[in-house]
Length: 580
Image 1 (cartoon, rainbow, N blue to C red):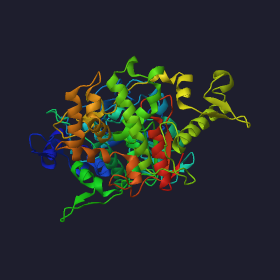
Image 2: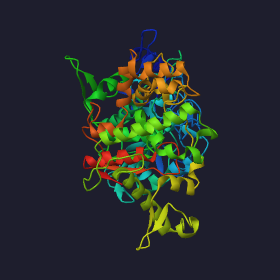
Image 3: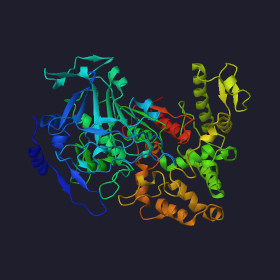
Image 4: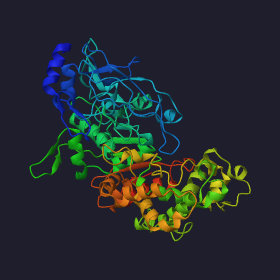
């Protein structure tokens, strides 16, 4: 049944409440969960509708206006990288409703262009999509708190007028039915920026998957007053809210809710990894409650409960920055012996940066060893020096395996492409072994592709992911305690070097280590550290992590150290998870 504009506005005045908050707290509009998070009720109320694609192969659950016409939104251009150079475009800052009280169209967070994951990674531009359905009830940034749900057409039944009437449980598409189809759950938080719903990847539809593109507020999300609404861990909280909504609406949504597969790249890979690590952890319930996630309640004793699980079946992470607090240590360790061979950011490095990189790289050794990582056979993986130890050998073995796979497929011919290389040997069985990482980086030309300064994730000028942490009224803060400790412990030595900026260094130490907000910032970073949550090294321990992990990090990707993606795989493996 469709509602008239007048009826909608009258109802919304009763159902919505604008929360009056303190000056430094973002403005929030609360919508009626009984209508907007119960998708069957939303369809009955005329705010949502299943829309059949032009080719008749899939349906989209989308928002409609008072006339029942789908509302459109504009995709934003791709922003893959969380780095010093790729800034991309900001997310959609608005928090208002349309005159009809429906979700408005508008640019969302960064993400991939049409044609799916890999097509988008090549740099597609934004297109037009429908406006999605709500994921949680307390709205600060409309386009980042909705998701688009795409379903193979065969999984739904329709009447003679084309209106969807129910789920077809007998239909088969590929290997799946409406009840067994896995759900691919894509986030577009590349660059740690906000995600908004994207166009469908029809290859998944053809295989019988349900495909969801989810919004999430992140570091570029602000309200109309300029306050930050996407501070950590809001990113993963919004993604969890979407999964909760999928499970709460099983009656009308095809797909196996026990087979939800998260997908993301770079910053989105980080969200996918933390999403996979943090299933059903009660530490996130207060944040879910604040966001208005369905079924999350506050108990009389001050604890929180959730009616629906938020864990996922599998985490697929491309180039995940799974440990951003210590990512600068890992990056320095990766590059430390390349400074005189072209491995500098923008072609130069001050004396201060050079020494800081050395200290960060050296600090990575005890940090790595403190994780107590092991290989598949349970053997300890450690570093005994910058370029020695079983961990370093395991990294080389992993790179060698990838090189051999490429050689077997004909993508590369090591004998001719790297003839005479002193970092590569061919073994008696004909396979290849990389023996030196610096030689590999120089010999393949990857040394010239560095795209981060020292430090890079938490840089001295706060120009990277620094706006992801701190309070809503703080634009940027430093968050890397590991770097702050180095700056504090070696202050006298570093202060004598060219390039040292006392004001920046002191601010760094205060924000991340000694200031009044340092502990709360550390909590934010820890709640988004998939590696340490899996290993239980910083006070948080995984409860119900994803059963399956697929991680893809290439040495040609200079956005982060290869070791960061390697470590999250080892951490998942240590919990008995299936890791590819």
